Amino acid sequence: MADIAQVADNDYSIEVDDVTMIFNMASESLTNLKEYFIKLVRHELFFKEFRALRNISFKVRRGEVVGLVGTNGSGKSTMLKIIAGVLEPSEGTCRVRGNIAPLIELGAGFDPELTARENIYLNGALLGYTKEFIDANLQGIIDFAELHDFIDMPLKNFSSGMVARIAFAIATITEPDILIVDETLSVGDVFFQRKCEERIRHFIESGDVTVLFVSHDIEQVERICQRAIWIEKGDLRMDGPVGEVCEAYRNQFR
Image (tube, rainbow, N blue to C red; front, top):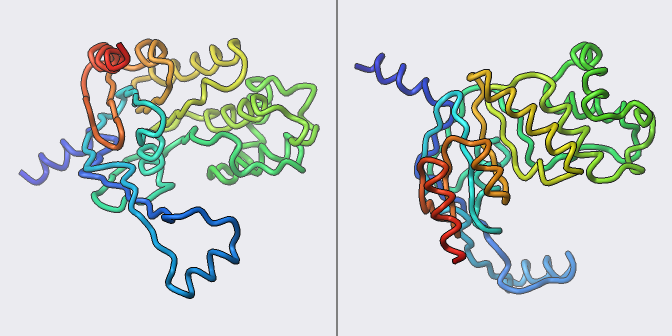
């Protein structure tokens, strides 16, 4: 029986079990570090709990494409950061099987003083790619991000959309086990958004890549995803077929 259970468990790329995320927030606004430490030493600093997520549980099968929907501040990005290993839950567990390409905060870890070429190698190293791997895939990254005339320009001269192009191209140059996309396609022009969506679709059609997709564009979620999870104010409101969940989500505004 144990072997059968293990095989069943391995069908899931992601298992979120009763996850709660608590942040301690200062009960008053402090303008500088000196004021913070004075109040801390005098035991005058008080915190209040903010529960960004409350007892969230769901499982995602390998190759499944799942959209996370919810209004701003609902806890979607916090959930993605827990799955990506950026945050550790206050309570509960999150189990992930496979390597992750997290497209959460595109451009994080880039150095604006370095050139685009240098940042590709830097960001690639942060994602665990070897120099030899980047050497072999550099042209593909340049082509996808359309960097041909700007590859040796300092990153500080780039727009936020251009930086997002580079980050997306690096993170998706190889097929991951799990792709986490958080509002990535809202950055840049419509033509590049379409290009990113096509690459995501390529991963989806392979059947081996698990995709977690967050977007405020509900039509885009319906176009890309098979299933949706609605998180609202830290609570799991609904989990089911993408059409049903997105329709229920829309109805709250009517």
